[in-house]
Length: 126
Length: 280
Length: 207
Image 1: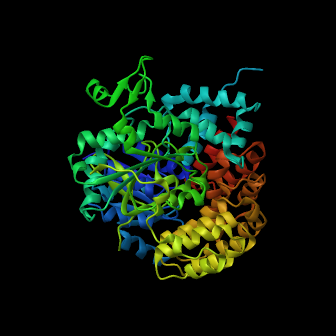
Image 2: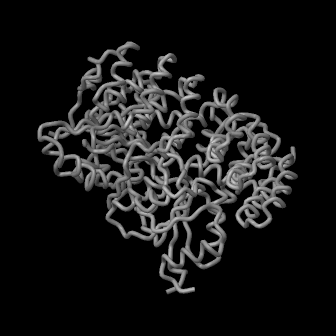
Image 3: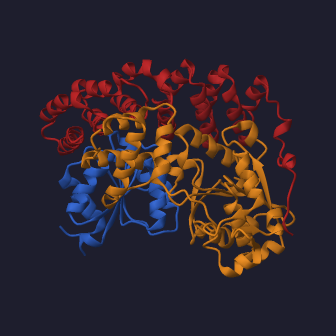
């Protein structure tokens, strides 16, 4: 199993963050698409479900929690999701998992960490 | 005046801004397309640099320049059966969903806005007659509105150029249109009678308040030209105009993601549309 | 069956006309047990600038998001001090979409929000400072760039600076270059910050 066949959706309202994650993931051979909020993310996922979702919490219109809850309620392939936040309080982790996240990371993320956990969740060997 | 050129960084800056505002994404291979239009607007606004133009774009209170630019960047030609996958969706998915929850004998109401010169509402009418057998079982109100009374008049007349009907098959052309001496085509009287054309300013609450109990709304390639607040207000109008479970269709490059969270995203085989939540 | 027409005046088949649309009638309807009624009241109250307090109060206790949406739109249009003060309190809410919707509303109220900006950008809570920078994204105000430069020069919190960087890449000019270079030194070990600063510098210098 290699990275090349895996599609990752980066859902974040900050363009620079999307670019940063995109660059790291593309360099590792993943195919990356972007969405600026949970609603656009949902539209893209409904079109073609992704293998992995990187989801920011605070976004306009539809935030990360609502996005994940909605995604998990759909009858489509359910890829794992990493929730990403600037907040580091414990209760947000619980909220994230309750919404349907598989993992939780705090911004800013180091490239090696991002790759490590994406690969782990995708079941790809290092 | 020296010939304007757009640098790569300027293109990237603009591209991100435009994507954020409209959802339209330009690939690198659209460089020429985008640069050309930016330069056109830079010159038209007499901005002496991209930077000054971009500042206007971002900070202008009226948002007019962004609308102008959006106009240039998008295809806004209207013609029969434009984006007809949505009409297919209407017949194969939306109407079945709506009818399943409707008491027989109640009317189906469809709103097409803007009417422009009528291509869209007449296309819907033809499509329903041709592809929806259940039209025999239901009363359908097809209402189409525009802010411009002149264009409403044109729509009522229903006369179209060959270009406008180029995607209409010869069979349908023959069935629903009358060819004029001028070479134009006029919609047959029965169809002209099937659409109610009304004048509506979407931003006027007094205009829109009476529009209620609709099952499907088509609002394609209009909201993309509105500023942020006007778009949201229009979405409010549609939300209140719809029955619970009713649908809104936007243009294929438009998305509620830039407008509001009021609607649920609904994926049908033919299209992604937006649904007002069903009654709790 | 088939297509039917109705007269234009007959379009509304609903009960809306029965409801009292006077100011007091609307305030009453804003408290209705029916969501639709509350929504219509919230929409219609946009025409009454004195309604901002009542709208704000309803917002804090309104369970239905569609009603909250209508309230936000009306508050945006009224755009007075009460509305802004109220929206600022929403920033401190635990309800994520309430915070985010408040940010969206404030983006569209440059005149009312501008005097509050300094306070927000220097709030003791870094999350509030981040939200303040978010508001700047669509805020039509000449001081946006200088506020952002102030943030990256003085804010100790990494994520606040990072949020400001994103916007500086879009609105930054010559005067942002030196502060950006200094920030590079300050967070030399942070790959994301280095990345974001490089983007901003390239965008500014490539113009």
